[in-house]
Image 1: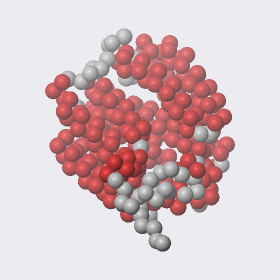
Image 2 (image 1 turned 90 degrees about the vertical axis):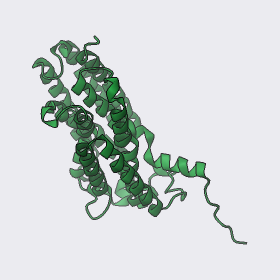
Image 3 (image 1 turned 45 degrees about the vertical axis):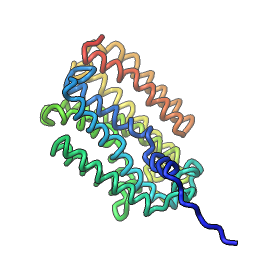
Image 4 (image 1 turned 180 degrees about the vertical axis):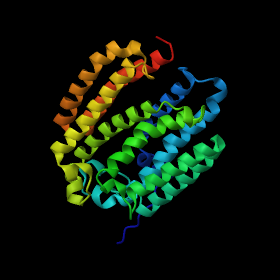
Length: 301
């Protein structure tokens, strides 16, 4: 007797597409996006008239862009993901979706992202297309930047730390007026949080032959790189606050206390676990100075 594979239902298919998009990743872009809006308006809540445009921008930079770049990533990472226990239940590893289907999802999400971004503005559309192109180059041959140490860190650091802020700001004010020290600070934070993710997948990447920064440097040196980047971000925030550049000087006493605590937290949590739990814990702790900055910058406190 031969067994035939039943076609997955619409609900299962939608769930698999959502799983590829990894909704928890959306906040990696949406939080800096909101920060860019705050920097541009100095308001906790932007003017009501800007809500439709900002909501459309959030849809693009969050769900649509991430779905596109993660789907192409999963399609080209399938060989390695099959060796990674953390990916055992993913739609492609389990066989519920094929790589070609994932590439189709990626193309569809990219098309929707670019089309929607045109309603926001030409500059936003150009930036969206560029991010999608880099996302393809990050995962797909022949460039496959994620397997080129240095490029993997740079792409993720800029995507996490700078692109979101610039996107939020660009919808409301010219990019020439953007406070660039915030982009540098965000990039350092993004790099420091990305490097430990390569530690979490180190064994699987070694077996798969993926040359990430952790594979190239080894676990100790890669960890030290992340720690140095985290320390550099903390020192930059102290300097910015002391100079009253974007970060208000009134935050300096809190910065003096929190920066060493965050460095200690990074050293203990990330180094001890080498897993995403430690990274998530450190990123959550980082929300304390971030929320305080937003409240102070907008004059709420």
